[in-house]
Length: 482
Image (cartoon, rainbow, N blue to C red; front, side, top):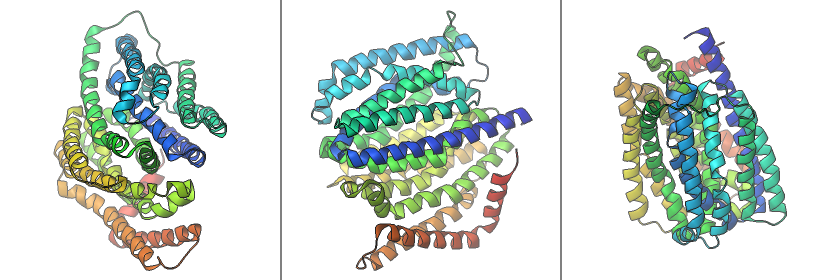
């Protein structure tokens, strides 16, 4: 790897981490404030709107963003046709959502949802246009402007959202916050564009990008069905308030995934694509990634699962207590996913994104029957079923990456086992201790500190016995100079 590329990757990783940690941390703080001001029903309405708009954005973008990042030789006019097609599709979908908003309201069983959908959908094309500009920044590993843009957009939109909430606007506060974020983000990136539309376009290039994008789109669409179908089941069976409870518990899980996993992955697709020809280096980096994820990422997820009652109570208040039962199983799954998450980027980097599609199909085939046909009396039971179904894809994911990189499956298990085992034992120790102290009342903060200290002591004690060499190697890797 050249010094220039190494420097770009290092800088990109630093700013991607800053973007993820800073922005997601600030976004979580905004959620904390709004959760104190709004009701579960109001959050549920906004979550239902976000669900529809996420699907709209997914269809309109069609995987072109990742295709643009991955393509080795990209000319300015190669981007024009994908951009025009995606923005046109987004405008058309916005009109469809606006026209059929009442029918979507009835389908999701959320009274008074239609007005929120109409307003929010009209701004969706802005997000599509911004996604293309963002992809061009990522392609150049220029993550600093992206990080600054997100900080600015979040601060401005947060002020708007909180002000609306204090004014008693309810769910409209979240819609206003989302719309403001899209507008500020678009203006920020397009004022200094890395690409602008040209009169010239290339149909042949469009076909190549479309083929790659179709594979990415198919994977994302199926993944949407596998990961967001639970939102649809919750809101249709249990109502908007239940979806609000779920969205708060899931928000903590999603934030943790962003903080501990996606910062690396946003840089990795661009960086790994440049190393795709060197399988030895790929295997070496893969071992470092999964080992580090299991030693540093997994224990954080498992700790948040173990401490979920204390965390949700202290952060959100008594009206969100039910979110703890949602947060715990999702965090446990996150502890596995933060290791598994790297597999998709490596498959894309070596030009095999269609294999990720097959993995997503396996996940979908496991999740849909589970949440639709296994009886569950409440949201907590449904989330437990959903979390167990997500685990089905894990052995397939690691088996496939082992085959493609030419490594043994058992080697991967040896790399990740110490972190998983130690975190599991530490998690169990907290729940045993909680059961033993249930009759003794403790202050919430004190309880969090006591159980957190217990978890940390058990985990560190086990990991230093089982994987001292791996810990030292991980520390050296982190401290290695550019």
